[in-house]
Length: 196
Image 1 (cartoon, rainbow, N blue to C red):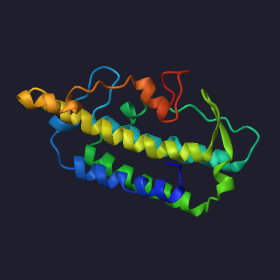
Image 2: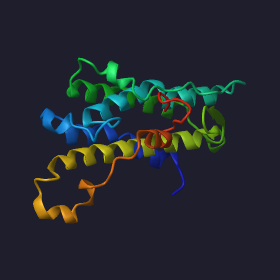
Image 3: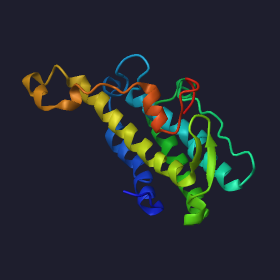
């Protein structure tokens, strides 16, 4: 499937509602476990998404659209949510994510992007030249990746409880991807552990 702004936005605008529906009001037994060192819990995923709304997608798109000579992206600290989320509840993070996403989608709509705009490029620290179209497509895939990751880490809480049905539930044994690979898909790179 090729990236089209309207179909991409259709996913981006639903992600906060999907996460609210999945996680809102759940006990911490569902939202705080992770898959081991360097992996995210459901709570971490929301904090990470909040950080991305502030520092990744729209700031990088804005840099591309500025058409300045130096369009190098600043590295994004993929672990920043650990300190930014400290002391916040999951409900607060879900609300914050919803508000930031709505504001970012309003900004995106206000740009009235053309196909020519979508072919403008910026410079990623690891990948070099990337287009605005690729950045926005990655934003959508990043959302879907973290939705899947959230569901997977939650499902694994019942890995033993399901008994023999585990044989029919591949999600329970699916290994977490190394975090560096996940974040490369999210627009990051291997040049620094804090990059995304």
